[in-house]
Length: 127
Image (tube, rainbow, N blue to C red; front, side, top):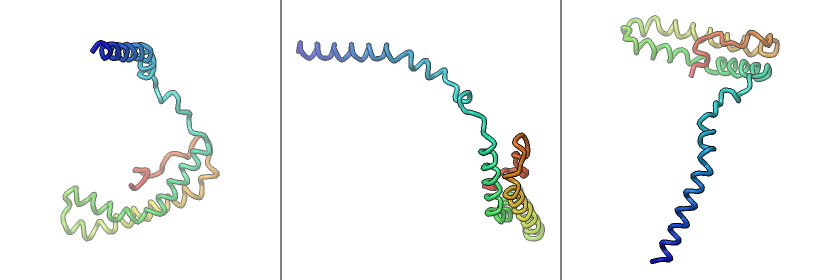
């Protein structure tokens, strides 16, 4: 039993030393602010974001029709509104989103570095 106690005491001492040695690292990890480490996006990254947003809007512009239907259904609109108005409203939004996507895809390389990278439509992406 004496050897077991010695082994257990050595193990406990090693754990205690490791805890004392590693404690300063845990304190440093809590003080880390990742927002300070993230660099501002470059002009190239902003252009690629605009291109991707435009491509997404062109490919998924049609989805405005079912999204509009679902949105109005959840608002509790009557059946006549859902059948008569929503298809026109959804189609209009689909053309608007697709056209905006084409505009963003065409103008992404010629935009000014300080402006013209904000999304034109809200929400920025349909999904």
